[in-house]
Image (tube, rainbow over all chains, first blue to last red):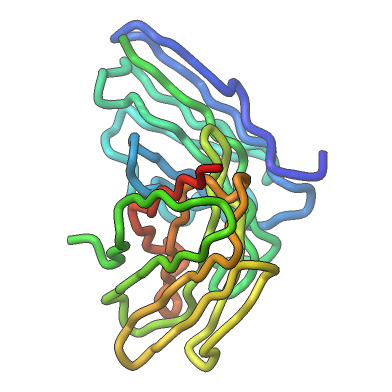
Length: 116
Length: 112
């Protein structure tokens, strides 16, 4: 597709369930980011991939969060044993360049996770 | 402490009127500042990107200004339309910092 695609758009999980969120970036984009956006707040950095390499995962809030991009294209964010505080919109963004400093960053529409 | 502060938190304006949103940041050393528009339930979409040497940049009815000395930016919306109702997010990047610092956004509601 022409843009960044995320699925599912909406996910409701019971506390303790595992969830997997998918991001399909723009073809050829080297950089891929995951952000967490709480209601009424700006996005918060979770992790960064340059191709298949996860160069920075300092924003992942706990070891229940895991992200991968095994072939340098599609990425999956997995949350194990979900907690209510994990409820948020998870945004994926990609850019053509590595370590995006000044260029365009393209966002997907996000996956809204609600943990009951 | 958030390195990017936006004001006001929200505002309501009548269709056809102008408005100005503010962004103050402490990110240093500074590389660039971006303004994004985020419609409800959608991902952010870029409006403008400015480096430290740029003072103003326009995108249609949106005009962004930057004062790198005072670390302030503004986004001016001219002749607002109903479709301008959205959250506007200021994003600042430090030199060699790819993580980006996001403000909490200003929610703009345009009423007929």
